[in-house]
Length: 549
Image (cartoon, rainbow, N blue to C red; front, side, top):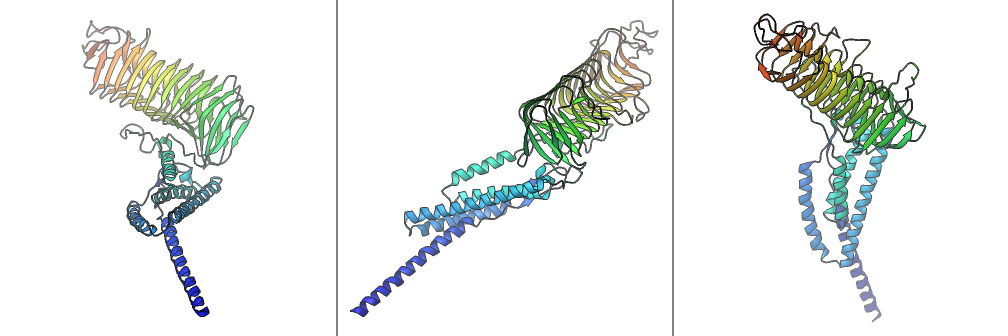
């Protein structure tokens, strides 16, 4: 009997061991299936400010099919287990998966932070954002996307699917970017083939690794490293000063900022390869109310003053009030988006080498020029290119003036000034241009040796010019006038056209004082019709017998 009892006990222990082993194997299989997810493939492009992240679509689809099959098998196997065991296994798998994703995200952020302090980006505009400025940041962004993709896969087989789907949705929303589309005219007088990089055109900054700064009274905020900086708050006598390496790209993101200074710029770029000033969907106000003081030999005479290339973009509004210039760039200045309300006693927007605009809304009131590009040391520099945007400019002098050339490919313009548009070579290819002027509507004047003959060339667009009284010219050139297309509607009590060289009318429509003409009338001191036709009205004459206007 004793031996029989021992045999029964041993048999019981053997059966218990076998059952425990089966349960453990089943639990281990379920855990392994849950965390076995494929990594997404990432493609990092080093061209023209772009970084692209892409999921391996085929691998993802195959995995989802396998996941569905595994889920079916797991469901069948789980029927042999108790409800308590099933919930325990599911919770364990979800918890382990969440832990793995959190760990990956933490490592990603840590790697990004370590690289954000180093200036390892190349000088060209190959970095569209800090995420593409260096390999570490790119990897961080890629791992973050992979983690979100893994969370989504885990959600298909875990009880926490709703919260993980929300995480993926938020990541997608944060990665959305607004990019201005620009179509340039490559057959114009300026080389427009490489004017704007992708980062120039991107209106939303990548703030995933940005440093946040709150402005405060009486402080100078020194920025010495490449990166993205989100600026908030309100302050008096505060200057954001960028003094970084000459290969560094610095992006200042204005997020509801108000700065009022007495004598110093609100934003002062001393050194950088390029500085971006980007507005969020917010109102931002920068004001200098007193007389500007110089920084050594540098005459810092603008609310935003940059000694290097500067780009303004964004989705918000920037209000600028200045006792001198509004925005001043000593190299190239680009504006690709945003709304700008500028009041200044000197030039509202000025740059030494060039002003390039492809988007934005501009409301300008100035006691000097609206847009002004001039290099005092080199008269071959200083041009203005516009391929989009809405401009309402009220200027005491010139609405738009460039030393070398002004090329307009698109945009809407309402210009009230002494002179509407002035440059050595003025070319209008498209756009809607309304000018009300008291001197010259459009003026081709010899300001640069880049062009041997001043020229006004009109190839397209709708141009309306209303001239004030006195010795005025609607379209004036110290050289030639060429009309190849477009519609020109002039109201002029004195001279409609005035050129010292050749006037060529090859196409388009010209209307002067309500009457369409078939040639360009030649003015003579704003006089009446010449000997060829005594019916010539105000605005010019033609010696060929045509009616002058």
